[in-house]
Every structure is written in structure tokens, then in C-alpha cells.
Length: 228
Image 1: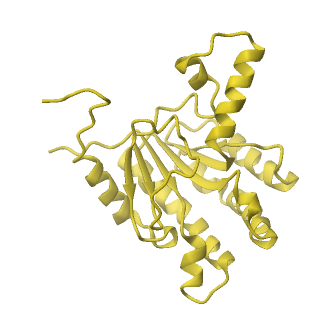
Image 2 (image 1 turned 90 degrees about the vertical axis):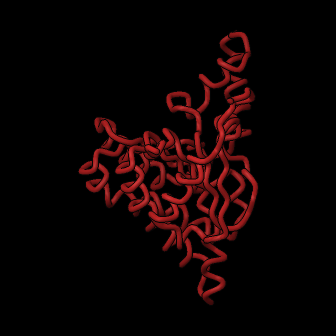
């Protein structure tokens, strides 16, 4: 049977801190290793034929973490911007979903640099969800719809989300052992197949992505209907 590759895969990058703690290291070291996983997994997803890869890197609730940890996470886009040529060379388009009004100047500038540098690419979209929260996204969508005096319905709400130009999520993967969505792409994942695993994100590799897709291929996607 030919493998069916999901158009849109979303991953919650969970378990960095616990990965580090179990090894007697600082939580920041876990985030460092986790950040370095973004590029190889993105390149592999593109090789498989994934159209959109959304990565949950920093949530609207993550501001409640220790100041040192938040400061480090704000530096991740700056480090990512140093590898722009890799994304250009591999034809990956980088997009950012989330609030920008609370980000430090250098973080916003780094993201903008990456987005601008890859906007003419034609390959897979790497959607970095940063200071992202689905409930905030939905509430802002409704607010804008009301301001423009447009009828509020399912279709119009989707048209005002960060992800309005992307296909809906087919497969949502969460490493780290937790089994919840954590305010991530709630509308977009309404009919997504959910795949949970105990392995932490810093240990996630290409084989794990293959296993998740293999599991996805054995799901009966009925979308509320019935298939014989």
C-alpha cells in the first residue's frame, strides 16, 4: 500500500526540561538540544512530501516560566536566523504564527529576517508557532470580524486565523508523555489524528516521524461519517 503523507503535520515540542533534568543538566540545555532538532526534522518532513510542518515552540502561557528560561527561548529565533541559508538552499518557506507585540526587539527582528529571506521559496512551509495560543487567536479573529461587520460563522473565523492560508492539520504529534493539546491549533486540529509518545522532543528523530506517519496510515478518517 502506498504511504499517505499528511499535508499538514503539527508537533508539540515537549519534554525539553524533563529531558535535561533526568540527565542532571539545566533545563536550558534541554532547550538547546531541542532547538537543534528543528532543522533536521524539517528537512526530513520536506523530503517526505509534507506541505506544512507546524512546530509549537513557545506558548502564550510559557511566559510564566523562570525568567532565565524565557530569556533563552527568546534567543532561539536569533540563533535560527544564523542558519537562513540552509532553509533557502532547501527551498523551505518559514512562517511565524503567534503574537509579536510581547516579543523582544531582537526576537521580532530575527523572525522577520527569516520570513523575508525565505518568502520566495516554493517548498514546504515551516510554521513556527511562537507566543502562540489558540484561544487568543480565535478571540482576535472574532474581534476583527465584528469590527468589519462580517457575519461570524465557521468559515469566516478560519479566514482570520494565523493559519488561514494553510490546510487543516492532518496529524498532530506530541512527544513527552503528556496527552493533551495545550491550547494548540484547536480549530485546525478538529479532525486531526492525534499521536502521543513518551520519548522527549530532544530524542525525537526521523524514525519517530516515520512511525507516527505509519500509525496515521492505519487510521480510519471518517470526519464524522461512515466508511465501509
